[in-house]
Amino acid sequence: MTPDIDPTRTALLVMDYQNGIVGRVADGDALLSAARETIEHVRARGGHIGYVRVGFADGEEPAGMMGQRVGEAARTTLHADASTTQIHDSIAPRDGDIVVRKTRVGPFGTTDLDAQLRERGVDTLLLGGISTSGVVLSAVRDGHDRDYRLIVISDLCADPEPDVHGFLIERIFPRQAEVIDRATLRERLG
Image 1: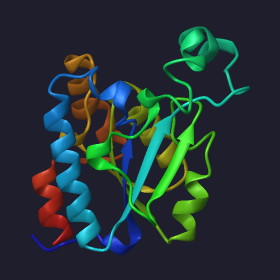
Image 2 (image 1 turned 90 degrees about the horizontal axis):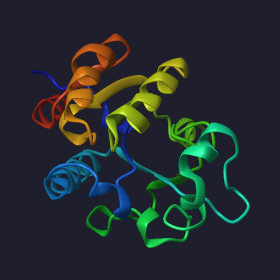
Image 3 (image 1 turned 180 degrees about the vertical axis):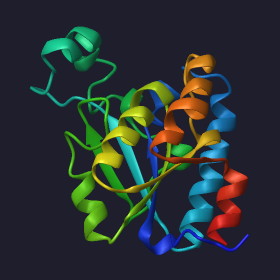
Image 4 (image 1 turned 60 degrees about the horizontal axis):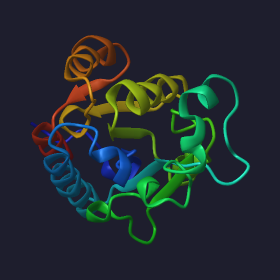
């Protein structure tokens, strides 16, 4: 297969791979290992790496439905400075990587992620995240509306409910994104 993904116009978004979230899915250690390998492969090919995490600073506690869902956690385990909201050390960002902190489920609405990607000439997003039914679904929907070419890396996504993960990967995401695994990504990046 001829490489068809231009890594210089591509960003791998590693979303919600946080200390307090990785443990919510089966085999989080294997997921971290897979993410680390993929990050290094994309980086070695000249691709961009972006990290998205959720955390609430003082005064950012959400209202409405989001506030009802996260409640007191916005001031404790989901506080922006809490260890639980930090990107897992095994895949820590490097200088020059994109890092954004969000206060909603999706990666775009409360961050400058789109602007940072556009400034770098990125038009293709490789998506991996926890959870498939949360941040990944939101990224697919919003990224599609923003006219990105979207590629969901199926084995870099996980959900506390494996059947929901499978349904999204197999039935929903292909409507707006390509869905491939890490091995296929390696071939397509060259």
